[in-house]
Length: 111
Image (cartoon, rainbow, N blue to C red; front, side, top):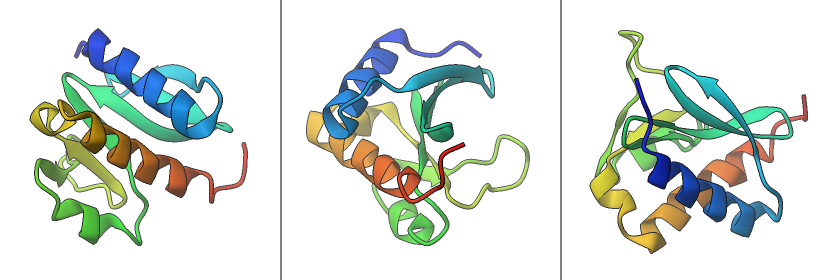
């Protein structure tokens, strides 16, 4: 699956603004993943954001507009949410989702 290159650029810029550093990138899951300190922070599958929100915040973020379970393996992956592109069109929403991903990933030990 290809990923939306415009969305990828917006994610890069957003993560730099939030974290102060350019994240590492890795092609994964048929899309593109953004890594911080060796941990997956978020990614892009097609034109949707793959948001790593963590297991504790999962249910809360799943109730947000445009959010759905990440289940491309046939099973929902707790802590990972797919966010529709329509939601991401709003910069404030994109920033909010990326901040949530960064807040979770910075709690993990570096790899």
